[in-house]
Image 1 (cartoon, rainbow, N blue to C red):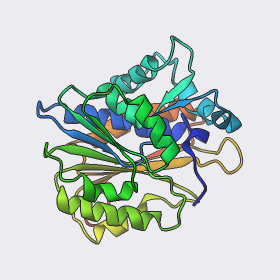
Image 2 (cartoon, rainbow, N blue to C red):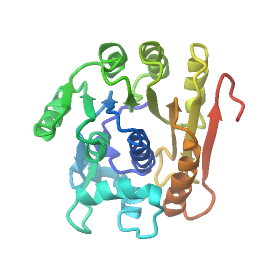
Image 3 (cartoon, rainbow, N blue to C red):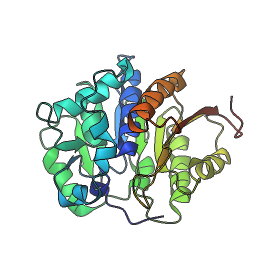
Image 4 (cartoon, rainbow, N blue to C red):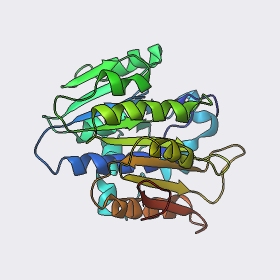
Length: 284
């Protein structure tokens, strides 16, 4: 895989795609009054300063969030995510990018709970400072893949576990699959969401095959493929694997994915993968 610090990539197309879908997953869980827990296994800093030298090195946000921040033609399914972007920035000036902890916190109800984990000690300290006044929020500093054992099952019996690892180790897919095997055994009804890069045409299928050895859960595979990379070496495709997806969530993927694709890749040569899977790789 590759060495990774997210500040270099904050606000890129992958962030836009995954966080727009994450916002809708959270809102879908809120259709029931009962509380739920949001577990973020690799939470990062929580928010990213786009004027930071790391963000400015390749300015990936210019090919991602910058292209949608000022949009006024977005579909209703994008509204929650864009509202979070606006809340975290001053007027029409895009200066920072909210990561998954801020997206989740901005949308959760008073009865819902957050568990945010970050292994990097420096980033964990900054995450604690950011969230010090957040209610019903706990910060952990451990291997993110261990959380499916340490925090599940939740007392609420409802929840969303979001995995967004760095993929800086060759065995990352195996570690994810092992973590999910534990999580699904302890919390079979939970919604599990895994982000993954697609590099050289390879991505989520390896993880799907591993998961299908241990589970017959319904899976939703959602990917976005831009037609080309904007500079040499840049990832131009990624995806989310959603285990126990909400009913008909594939329609949400289609709406959000197609709109983002049009804004970020107007060539018309990009594509969206959006398919339900069970015990085989055949589309349902």
